[in-house]
Image (cartoon, rainbow, N blue to C red; front, side):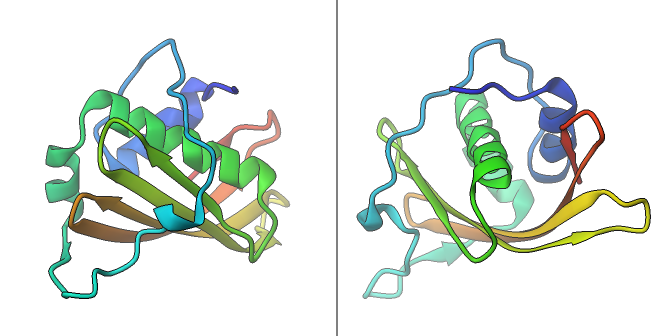
Length: 139
């Protein structure tokens, strides 16, 4: 499994979570349709602010979220989805790169929607990531 270049991890972490450093990449479970973060039938899901979500995730959770985003940006085509879940916690996610474009500097950029679920708490994040000449992604 690939690891994050530090610059990508730091840029993404600055937006989503507190920056973390770790030498070993977390392992993601294979995608399963049942792992989509969908609303419960009883409507008991609660939306979290980014600060509330940060407080509920440990360092390993944050690295899993970042690793999944890197994989999706590198390997999923526009309109596709990367679905993942963490077995040891009730942490799940769906990443959907929706469109690619070139910015004013000629870099390839991607609009991304990222839905996260931790137990009954959900958060959707929208962002733009741009690939640098050295292959790293920045926000």
